[in-house]
Length: 331
Image: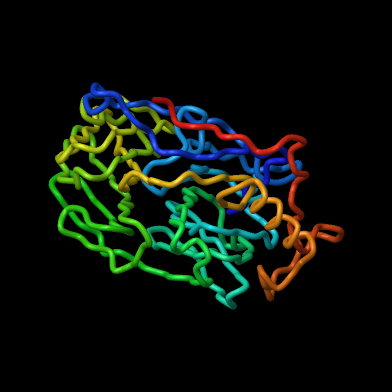
């Protein structure tokens, strides 16, 4: 998914150096609403990046959207747009999205199935909800690539994890290891990604890697994470050091959430629009190459604008008037 804000945040992300009491606390991150598109824009709830926190491991971007009635929202139609220095992770709860990219991949994003696209040196893609989709509901996540792999070749991986059934819970592990389930999808840094559904009143203890920090994004709640109650659209963050996460559904309806984890990302990165880089100059150069439509990003075949006069590709927003400045995690 593209970040189509007209004035995107300029963010240099850095790891959190937490105080001694951080392990005991669940940090609650509330989302902000961001419109994607034009007059009938989809509204998404963005929890990463925020001024409060910019990274969870290498996870650097998290949008949560829906359930949206496509008849009202117009669905998703994001024209070809670029990415550098990152991987996109698409995960749906409801609906279907058609993906096309400059690697030549044409795929469908369906509920419970992972689509992971790597855009290191440069890739572009389009995302369009299918005509059969009546309700669109899911998350779009980005992973920052470490320095050694930030110019990685274009790639695309599809994976449909087998559900893991536990007492009162259903898990789908799409990246990393959890509850005896291991995703075969390779990542450039240690990561965890899983969908968890809890029945009413159910509790779950999950053994996790103490080297990782974790974030629990609530799609349907409330949910208690290690004793702290989280509402729909909120994300609970936990510093490294825990070996067990306790999750409880105190409500009368099933609760659904996305668990993200990763070892603290030890590198600073600059994020602007759809680019992840290491400096202001790098972002400026990537934008210029996209605007000039150089071979760096390639070309998407088969995308059709939804109406006459609609763009065949998504131009980059204007650059900020000042040099892009750091915005760090607290601590």
